Image (cartoon, rainbow, N blue to C red; front, side, top):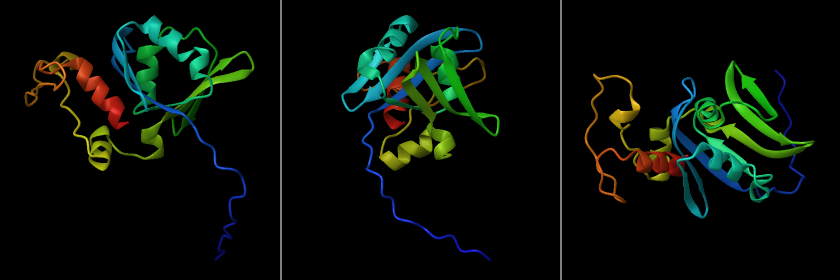
Length: 172
């Protein structure tokens, strides 16, 4: 049996800016409801897909890392139609990473956190100490779906899609 030899890391530690992305809609149908970007400054809510794209592709976000839980879903929901230069890395036929290029430079890179740490958003929520909200019935295309009713703390609305999306991005 061969025992691997571990060598110390000699490179400098990189300090990356992270942005968590969550969206609601259906990329398969081209349906877009809302997207949330969550970073150290808090949540930014986008009800307009084009405003989200302009914000992400701005110079302010050049080089930032985007983290999503189920990147394929969020990417399809937020970036239909695919008109820019994208590079997708698949691992076992599942999305691992997406890179949007700006000429020869990387504009940003998005990773699927669930391919790095295979946990559900609810399980991640337990780790970070935040409860995941139950999926609002308006987002489920099944009349048999029932969820325990909850009201969001920000608006006091039942099954608030905005707060649901913010919470998932916050957990991610």
